[in-house]
Image (cartoon, rainbow, N blue to C red; front, side, top):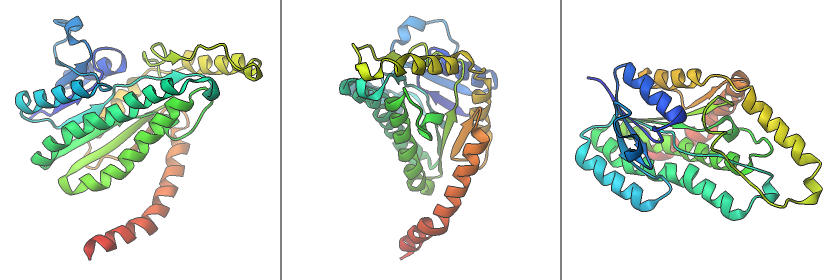
Length: 270
């Protein structure tokens, strides 16, 4: 029986590319969009209304899932956007909204799916994070912070969901040619004079990464492999530096498992 895959933010960019690829591979794909009526008749997969930053929208979405979709095998948390700009020059409200979407929106959608997965005693959550959820480059402070939060949340959640046979993974892409950079919110202020010489160099550095970005095909392939895997890995960096990141993570994870996890396992047995 073919798996049903739910992808948030599937009406354009990387989400749409992933949805089309998975459907071509025989999966039953359901996507989400803030304005699904704009795409009526354009896609062969079902498109549901969802604004992950709006509580009422998430609540309505959860009700629709419980009544209209009998079974969901995989949730791909893909919806999100990027704020760019020097941290000190970025208004707090702009940074707060970045978290409302990238972190809290992702958490709310995940929570909407968890009752379904627990009832099924099975499920898989794959969240599109970013390599900046593992490192902290300049000009992306709030975006990086939101992805660090996503990483920390799912690192902990995976242990709590293991008892229900719910698998949890994150994918951490480097720069790839998607609409993320083009849809980014760039902070526009009068600026702080002390950054005047630094700012254009930083913007040029950021633009260079965007211009030299590779094809996102490898990210799609990574997610497909995770869906097919019997024991999917939690962290999956993709692109340049991925090997180095994996090595450092592996070392840290082994150290963690050798101490804290043993203590937790021992406490749970009491």
